[in-house]
Length: 473
Image 1 (cartoon, one colour):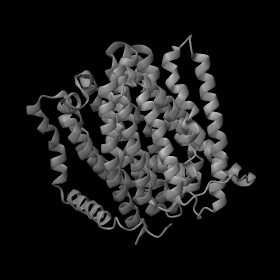
Image 2: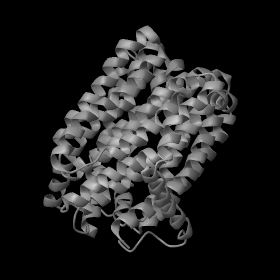
Image 3: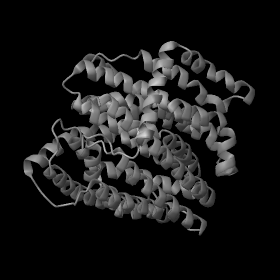
Image 4: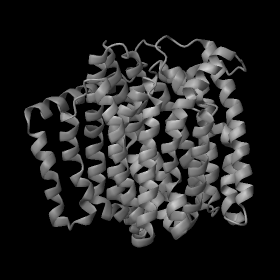
């Protein structure tokens, strides 16, 4: 079986499994948000954003270094990786707690900062599964990874829902988050057949850190977007508005579950095609188009019915979050598409280009956000989020100089995908008009052929669920 076929089948399989996971996550979010309300959810969202950023600092891109190796990683690679993330995660946890103590009182109330401090102390749990996940991804073991993640989602939903209904407020999602990460930690070790061992090899550790520094410098700049809600919305409008922004972001991110699968696949596949520029260029072109094709019906379908679904499912208190969804969805869609080129540059070690790209993106997000939020309210942050993928122009310019990448297919699919996302702004009788570009494009022969091919791989993935990912492991 070709690498392309294996990648598409693997992506289809994990997307199907992540679709199940998204149902669990949204079910959890539904019950928890209704039970604890926007203010407590805003406090959790702010704490979670801060800890997510610290977790990325602790990982330092070292797992990606192992995944992208052209030769098969050895057991020593995974042991050195485990040792490294053990030390970096403890250091990041101490840093987070120390900063929070310094901010308590003059900047943030003690009651509001406590959820972050608890999550920060538990940070190593959130990071130590890195070598096991790297081993599974390197072997294209996406069937096992999917089960690991679904197990975590079941625990997250169960714990969060029970505690929210018991009246624990903000502590329901906090404890649920820690339980979720603990489940993933244990189950990923079991699924990968990996037994953690402390091992230090200076040359290997230096190679990981050298690559990780370039990867993290660029990636962490952009991952500051996780802090845009707490910093821009929370500081200017308070935790209630932050809760609304966090829900809109959570919905859009959850609906983009396919993007997670293809991002993970792209690092492995692009790493194996590094020596063949023509094949690599075709792979990047197809990956971008596939992102738009896969996400369009999910995001567009939800957007069309969002004005009914959000208040009916989450409660009337969350109705204002609907107007935030269209620009936020646009931001997630464009990010998913052009992250394929970002993964290519990371594989090729072009971290400097990604640093500039992400610096522009985060500058747009915070700059436009601080400009518009005082004037427009929370929708100002949503508009900034929708505009910040413009920063990918830096990335696109560099990729064009490296590879023969075609943008014809992805441009057509974006023209089809974006208009339906703005359905909440139109009356019901006009929303069908937003589907006309998609209908016109899907009627062309090349579009029908491409959709049929992707559908074949999805059906093949479903038929072969009883087997593990192909024999690359």
